[in-house]
Image (tube, rainbow, N blue to C red; front, side, top):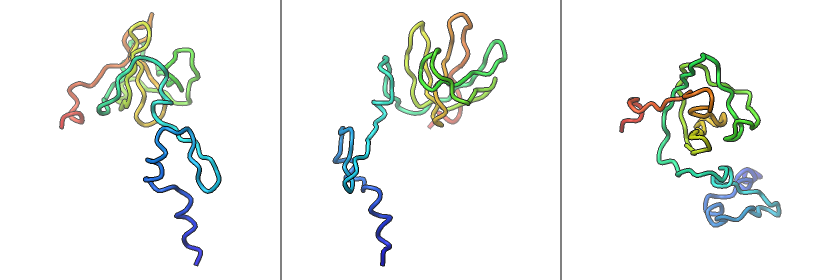
Length: 134
């Protein structure tokens, strides 16, 4: 009695898997865009993440770090910041210019960076954090 409508709104996983690398999926006459992580990552050298890593923001000047919308110092800033001492999860590490490692925050807030030319090291990896031991 009309209860099956909600189930038809989202395609089943098998349909999504069959769509593969197509840029759009046709569902009920509407084309829905399909985005993959590969399309969202800028064309820089990087390796696919094997697991999330933990980092800590340790600025020498005590300032907050303005999180970027993209891995670019001149890129738009999001409305989020990292506070001194903050520990955060990283889902992607991408090597940029000037030995800068761009860090994609696992919570979706945007991109941070481990160092900045003229400023120095800002973020340190938490190698010995118990969360990473399995």
